[in-house]
Amino acid sequence: MPARLLAAAALCAATLSHAAITPNAPAPDFTLKSLQGPNMRLAEQRGRVVLVNFWATWCGPCKQEMPHLNRLYDKYRSSGFVLMGVNVDEDPKTAAGTASRFGLRFPVLFDADKAVSKLYDLQSMPATVLIDRDGKVRFLHRGYRDGLEDAYERQIRELVKE
Image (cartoon, rainbow, N blue to C red; front, side):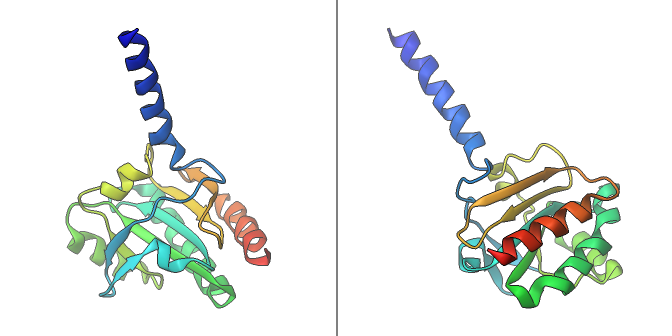
């Protein structure tokens, strides 16, 4: 009987670790230091549509999508939209330099110890999570390819209208 209990506990633990990023599940809360100065907390964004984009300076597709993210942020931020760019590099100075080169206008947050990345069970880079006004994960994208920004825009528009 103990072996069955152990197996059940392992199954529950595995399920819980993946439940954090399941559509319609609450988005795991986090607080991270921002390039702009103050810390940002996800829970404080309730009532807004939030796009959390995990990226790294060594990630080519991440750099490819940055101009699109800037455009989406500029277009929808007056509609209750927030974009949080979570950088996973170990050195925040590297991330700050890249953010400056790309002219990023959205908040850039630092996850150097990768605690938030682990919380969101990232398996690829970039990873993008769209969260509704109630704090629930609605869309999850792993990786980036040309044209994916069109899907982001449709999904943002849908969530902003709710």
